[in-house]
Image (cartoon, rainbow, N blue to C red; front, side, top):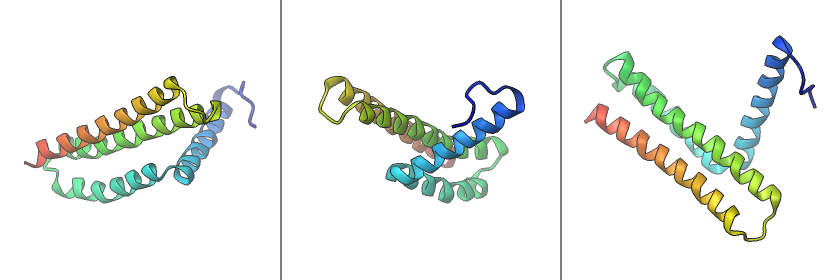
Length: 119
């Protein structure tokens, strides 16, 4: 494990490696994340083609990036809850449900953003 007390450029380099490991783990273990990456790959060129201004393009692409961000956080919550234990616990279930709700809300927001711009 890299030095947790690193400063300056070394800290930045370490953070990049930790982030890459996070993306890799999420890609390997979370089907929803893989699906949402595919959504991003399909919608980004569409946004660039259909958006009438730079702002519209950024809003359309950004709304899908928001979905990816929320999915990453939800996956982190799920991993921590699963690390604690697989037995049913009300708070564990609540944490997972709240994370899922956040992902759903981000997907709804992306749909609203796209609809508002395109319709």
